[in-house]
Length: 369
Ligand code: GLY
Image 1 (cartoon, rainbow, N blue to C red):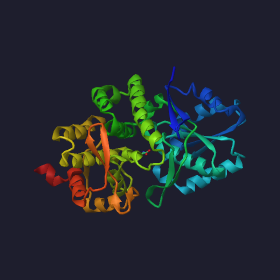
Image 2: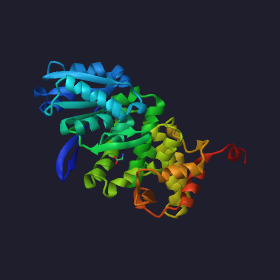
Image 3: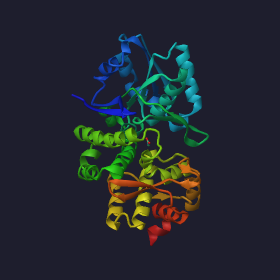
């Protein structure tokens, strides 16, 4: 029996997150959304299509009014309005109307982009998230943030649009390459650090099973991780306050991602950003030195970086200050009061940011000291 986590929106049940280990239960979930009376359009990318496109399409064919699939080339560089335009055109050509349903089958790029199409096509059409990466299952498929990148600015154009269902087949995590898989773990760690110290401790204990991708462990890990995200987004769906806590590690993380021209994965940059935020939290005497080093070193067995080569800290600071998380000229920085409790601080100085960036900057000189 699949586990199920209902997410509320404006205090009413809005959609379920369903945790499964195959696509076997997908049709039943879609049928509960009257899928047999609707046209269904899978939107996916070239990588995920090769793995699951045919399987998922076959599950729908013959059961609904029409089942079609739109595939775009995989990669963050395709998370653009040009790709959105291609999807719109396909939907028009296939006669998809407002009563029909889009299925976002893939990782964060597919989910964010399809969600944005769903928010805007015909002024809004239902969509379902079927996330297939750890990053998408732990984070981006939940909470209704959708969007695309614009001129090198990440997620600059977007909308809030809640999915009708999030269906996770945890078995898909087995087909991710190590770098993709471990990159998603940074968001899981983030959820423990911001709100659930017991979950953080559990992650420390279960390190081996998580690295081995043991399905039972993954199910518990994602259920607990998604519970944190659900509680935060239910309280603050449109990020007026508390939801910003989910940006732990993202302020400096996004700056490094941009500085490195998106050659590092998002989760890798989030790990670096969390180390930097934990460093500032230690210097402000919120965390002890031991806690700072424990958080930092926790990323190592998950093959996540705790330092980065060849950056100019001053330039990273400049990029940090040009991020969209700025408000009225101040940075909304997320720090840790303690493990399991994050807070938003608007007083972090340039000097503190520079010291944190220098802390995670690996230079040859340091290596020879
Ligand atoms: N990934 C951060 C959020 O959903 O708010």
